[in-house]
Image (cartoon, rainbow over all chains, first blue to last red):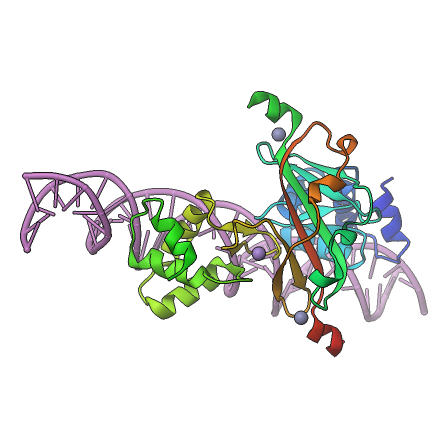
Length: 139
Length: 139
DNA sequence: TCCTACAATGGACAATGTCTAAGTCAAGCA
DNA sequence: TGCTTGACTTAGACATTGTCCATTGTAGGA
Ligand SMILES: [Mn+2]
Ligand SMILES: [Mn+2]
Ligand SMILES: [Zn+2]
Ligand SMILES: [Zn+2]
């Protein structure tokens, strides 16, 4: 049973076959799928699930704070079930692989007050781009 | 005369009215426009410029390293002429305002070798999200 | 078992981005 | 100055990503 599904159930979500499948598809580590990728995988388990439902369900999971949207891909949003441990991303520019990484210290501390221009900062998104080990070797 | 235009000219670019206008629209500080915003502003100066040309021109400027694409907006790519000084972005979640900021130190140093998983990292993109001074006051 | 509010569906529509075939023109050269 | 030519621009078709709505279906409580 998926952790994500457990958490959603605990919030009084009405449980449907569609929501269960979306949650199962998103379960795991280093999962950063686009909405369409989620839809393809969901269709493999529940052929009649619609795109609209996938978008709706992902949006609700994001509103509940159980999934986060990441912008590692400049094209489509990616959905990440690892919402309860702050982390950052390592992206291979060649093959597109995405890994979670956990930096030391608070990333906000690198930004001095003089560079905050009066903003109240609530969130920092960090993406490291480069080549993964196999793409580095192939280059 | 725009600095960006000067640099492009120096690279043997064929100069056309369309390219000139796109470069002029992108000139300045804290400029982070979407392709459509660039197109709207370009049309104000050169009514017949096409969307395709704006996309082509932006793509070429990016290839030449004179403009960078930023993912602060999860929807559309934004184009930033400030390509020669590494910097990061401060984004107001309320009004969408984007400011350039310059952190202390190298952002890569926060990521220990043990968290690099063999990747060769060439670039780091950092986005701080929060509320700008006026949106903070209004909240 | 039945009700009903909430959820799912299909398809239209909107926003963003890519591609191509045909016409146009900047820039080097006679 | 006036050709020539390859690079550039254009309109619009098409692709991808995301949103919305009217209708139909159903989870879960009475
Ligand atoms: Mn992640
Ligand atoms: Mn910038
Ligand atoms: Zn790779
Ligand atoms: Zn603001």
